[in-house]
Amino acid sequence: MNKNNMNRNNVFIILTVVFAVLFFVTFTGVYKFGYNLPHNYIFSKSMHNSMMGESGYGCCTQIACVFCLTDSEHKGVCDCFEEVVNGESPCAECVGNILQGNGNKYLAKSFAKAISEKMGDEYLLPLKDIIAQKYNVPVNEQY
Image (cartoon, rainbow, N blue to C red; front, side, top):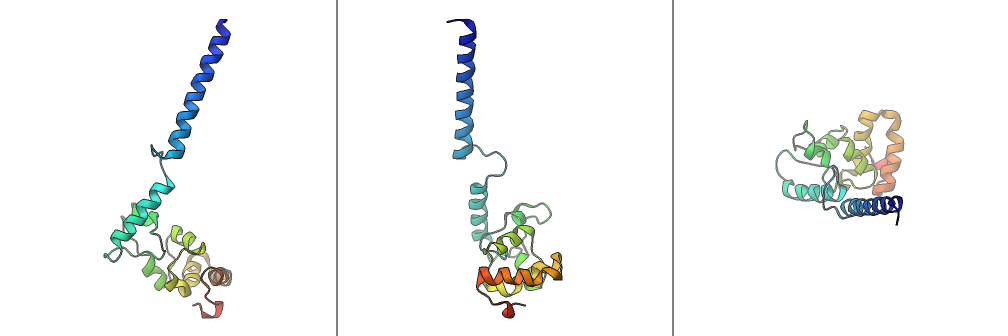
C-alpha cells in the first residue's frame, strides 16, 4: 500500500469517527450545545409546576414560557397572565404559544385584544379569527 492510500484511509477513518461523535452528541442530548428544546421544555414544565400559585409567576399559556423564566429583565417573574387580563400584550413567546393554541383556555376571550395592543388595531379582526379557530370562541364573544 502506498503512502497516499494510507493517508486517505486515515482521513476517512477520522472523518467517520468525528461524524459518529457529532451524530451521537446531537441526537442523544448527552451534551447540551446552547439551546436544547427538549431540555428547556422539561425545565420550563417543571418550573411552571413548582412556581404555579407563587407570587411573581403567572403565565397565560399551558406551558410556562421559558423567556420569562430565564430573561434577565424578568428575573424569573412572569406576569403575562395579568397582562392579558388587563388587555396588554404578553411576551413574544406567549404570543406564539397562544397563536398555536397552547394558551390558557380561560383567557381565550381576551387574547386577541391583548395581542393587538402592541401589533395594532388593524390586526384585531384577523387575531380574533385565529383565536376562534384555535379555542372555539366565536368572534362576537371575544373582547
